[in-house]
Length: 395
Ligand SMILES: *Cc1c(COP(=O)(O)O)cnc(C)c1O
Image (cartoon, rainbow, N blue to C red; front, side, top):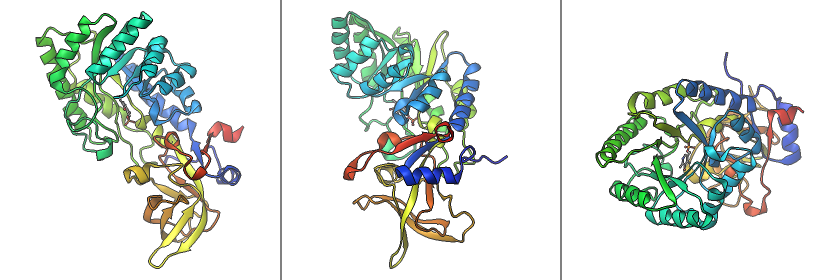
């Protein structure tokens, strides 16, 4: 049976909320639940695989509850995210913390919480973690983020694993870093960390990453270095063009690449940091048409949501599958769908086919669960969008 994103809510319910609160995020919690179940199923066959949800994709408490109930850990990139994860009841034992610019305050927060691992991106950072851990009389577990120079073949703003990117240590610095780590008293080397980019749909990219990790492991072993854990990062992409065709990403194929290609040593643990692939499809930005404006050469559909609610089109040039759920069946017209923000970049789509639309119609931007709500801003003195889950709408 075809997947129906709107099962569980009615157009009238969404329209009523939009009239009351303006543009808002709707989260289909049943889809998130099923997505998490699909991941759990894969993990049940490989007890040495561990998934840490990348909380930067969406930190909404209602979604985090489901992620916690599914037993996943958390991947953080700021002290605020570590705090949010702890407040939401995640065990510090499942929290990993990455980022090129961790401040002293953030490092202290994570040390005091006793998180499982710092993903360290430079030598000066390791020394600061060592100093702060010594002061707090704790020992920090470190993984080194290695820049493997593997091209993710994705958007340039979300490619992170090339020499030219700011992330991670260069290969030639890795062995000296591990040696120094073993000499310092308040830090312990536990593993390697990689994250090569986002929205990766070509799984051969992950095969290349596995091959690169296998080479690095051999080099380390030749130096007598033993690695407890390998963190391969996140980045699995989703189908933005047809959100109803693949509402749940093919996690089986994704994990299989690592099962088949990564040479895991006895007792070694493998960690994953999936963000987008877990939450993107369960979220949608619901807006309404303010005006239909006839231009000289095109028609503009001016909606009440803008890049303050969903910045991905303006920031990455991305296109979200868009529906007019009030006018289904009307003849097709083409629109430039734009928001009200005073910037030319506030455009969701150009020349986009929709049923002929009118003021008040409900326009839904799909696949907005990842990097949507978390990136919302108050530019133009707007208010942050409210959020509603299926349960909240029906209670
Ligand atoms: C952003 C990020 C992730 C998650 O990326 P997705 O593409 O959302 O899966 C994982 N690890 C690190 C270090 C990140 O910065």
